[in-house]
Image (cartoon, rainbow, N blue to C red; front, side, top):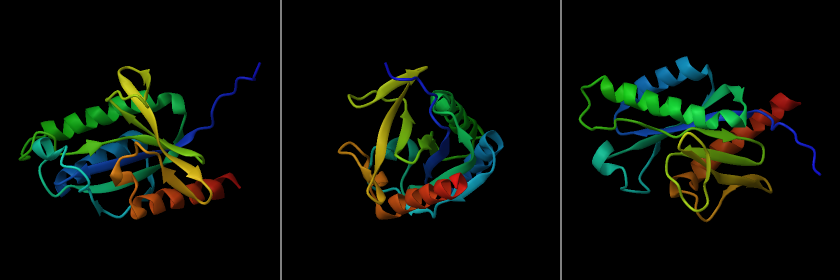
Length: 177
């Protein structure tokens, strides 16, 4: 029988996208108040790999990824997704936005071997982790980089996104040593 061990805490990341800079700024502020200071923030990149969100979020979406200093036990991912959904609702309720969903927050946990993202959508490759939340391994580390799986969304396969996660991995390795 294998020995049961608690997994190491992972780096909390929140990829966020919106077409409204003011909604993104509000969500960033609320996320920092909730999860603590940022370790690193990606550059703003186009989020144009799908039209899935156009009706509820509008056009010209932009993606940014926030990485937080505080490490998170993997067992907290479902609760974190509930909290990011609440932040989305709080921003939307502030009013004045021309779309019903002004920002999308997709929390995940980055470890040395993978990026796992939380979602409310069930699919064949996702496991329920509690409270109506599912998790998927979106990227895996292989060789010298994170690489996608066949189901990985195109926005997570872009060079700039992979480079950002690889830099975060270097940060984690430096902090371990």
